[in-house]
Length: 432
Image (tube, rainbow, N blue to C red):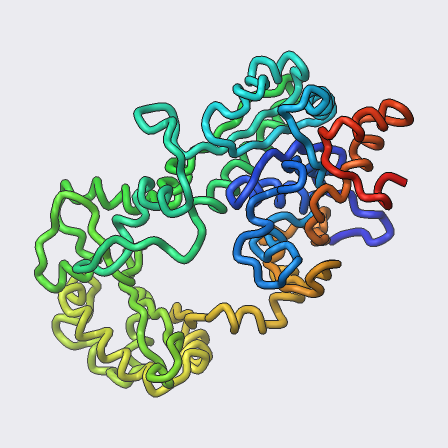
């Protein structure tokens, strides 16, 4: 339990992050580092900024939700790294920061004159963290976006109905999933630096991150050599397996039969569904709940292997029962019996769930241009490093602050940098 008499220290307090990321994968990573107390200095093109500021705009004249929801707890500095004074400023930022994070296209930093070797010369203790589409190999120079990563990492080929096309997922496993992986690499490198005194290069490829999240499908790829995948619906339907892990619809990937079933109101509500899992340990309870107690002892139904060929019949009967209940009633009835079920929650229902705000999983944030908006908070809870979500920065909002407080520019030297055009147009109030 946190001792409230002691002011809590953030886990990454004192760590400076030079954030050269944009769009989603990199900002996901640096936002988490900011939530844990790191000072994240987001470098943006003068007058333009992160492309997502003006993508999918819903409030005219304000930064988009695409930007605000991925860039909390950061400070923004405008910087033209092609300008000679801009390069001077960037060099000083590298000297001062603990971590540089980037998700540029391959070779971009090298072309700017800041190769990994050069960065090490400037600051041997810095950790350079990069997100790329692919690792070394024939695709290493290819540009990758979210859906490309899902497809290249094995997610799309194993998602969807057996007789339908490959599908991408609703969750952003290519971008945000990769950002989460890189974040773990960064904090691990920081921990190792405490022992070695040296920085290092950390790289996460989007294909690799998606494949890691789809590893159970690689498990099934190898199992095919030993015969059909018995827990897949197509086994019970007598459909032959091919050479690759097939799409399995809504089958459970953990070996326990599971399906998405209709609930009361499904005719009008596209999310009136529940996920229902028939674990072997609670089979008798399932039979009692759905009104089929004789199935507990009926020949051909008593053991999991016997039931595999009858899953369509079994789930059709369970669905007859779930269609008489709302998805929440199904949960209320099944949970006391330890029957694993879960309502299909819409984003609207999640946004209206006050219990999520109480835990910080959802947050309400005030913004000077767009007013209050909702965002997803930090999913990781630490007892001694509480997270306070602060709004995303306006473009260049902290340029002078970073130049003076972090880099030590002042007086004529600061005027020289500001007047060079390397840091965009400084607002009058920021310059005072």
